[in-house]
Length: 143
Image (cartoon, rainbow, N blue to C red):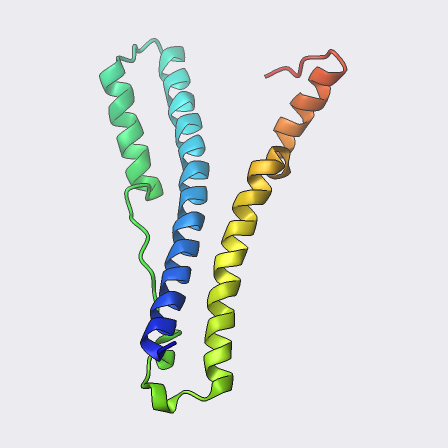
């Protein structure tokens, strides 16, 4: 396999891994965003103000911009640009290292996705675990 192909596979693996991490972080930030807007709405209602759907949407946009939800992920490949060189400059060991690194990144991302798919409780937060356990024994956790 040519060095350009190896390097492009490595960059693709890094991008795929970064996109998966970005999706996870955006999901976490969106739940925080909803909680913050709900808190702001609750405080406004306590003060006697009313919230329309338009005001709530504006608050969601404002909080989303503050949290950086609109930022798209960008892959920084400066750490691996030294690997992009001519075929003749690659030793067999370097070629093996690049192939192994690319395979590791792809496998690690797939492993995390499969782990979450087949063990959905593994990434639950502590409060969710407490609620689930309480429901099992017939109790309700107060909000």
